Length: 97
Image 1 (tube, rainbow, N blue to C red):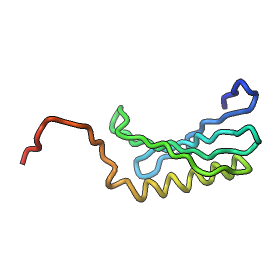
Image 2: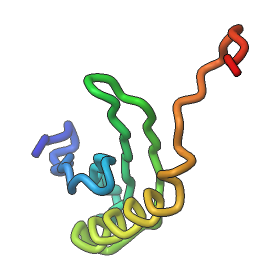
Image 3: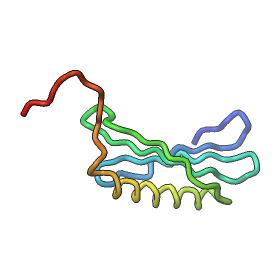
């Protein structure tokens, strides 16, 4: 865990790997004591990151509730987007047919 300057603890804990994607709970505590659920989803291709998404979610009363939502949304996003999530960089090359 990391401690922020405001003396509240901020955690960054990898929650797992699902269908080749790594997702991390990057939820943050708010000034009112609640937690903003946030998830980072990364697709790795060898030693480089092929794609990454950061998704802000709802606010929850506890860190545990926020973490549970992170896991549910990460898996749902991966299920819905894994087949279509490809690196698409601009290029001047024409495809070879």
